[in-house]
Image (cartoon, one colour):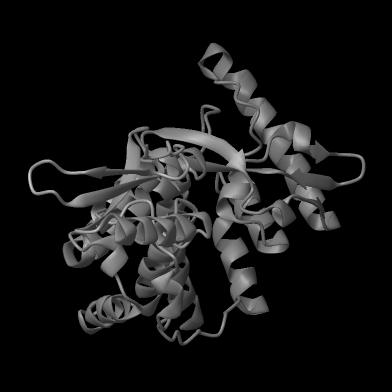
Length: 324
């Protein structure tokens, strides 16, 4: 009598249709919980026993992939749905999806994951570069693909990350620019009397990002010490304005305001109080330091458009005054 084999060892049977000996080993489960199995076969039972032992050894050593029919598009679907939507901001999630939909899937989407090579990734990046995409976008394509393949390794769908083996596009970094003292003075002169004069002055004097400045609340401001606590940013996500943590943990900081800026902010607070009193019930109490004329948060996109207009106006005024 043939000894009974445990589930761990797999099973051997003779197929009635052609007399072929078959060996079956349990590998694991797929994403839906369905059991995954691998098969070996031979005309002789001893050969199936040998093959099944070898297959079992590869499974135990972690050298056998759980699924070998997954294509790239299926991997991204699973990655977005099961992992990334819980880990990144909606705006970043949408950006990743756009990168994948526009640039990765049309080229690699139907390719089997186990057949994907670093040469395929190199060709993709080269194709996108030749198509006129800026190096920053091409690097983003590579980065998103690499993140997804890292997860594929954790899921035991591939053994290596071919995206990290590919060559990253070279970027020629441009030297950063700042306003000259004369330009900064001219900008502040242009802003005199503007509703957001204090906001622009704060960003200019402290280097706060747009979202950080717009996310400031009055309870972040210590009027006695002249310190601002920066811990959040205001941003648009779809149709809503939301506050989130600052871009990195290191971005959470205390900013010591220069004396002129402290005075400017106190004057801004007084003007906002007068405006609130004037509007009465029309005023929307949001608690933000910088608001619209009725107290609501300022949309970062609207501020950007406004600043562009101010710059154009400032340039025009500068050209006029310089000719006088």
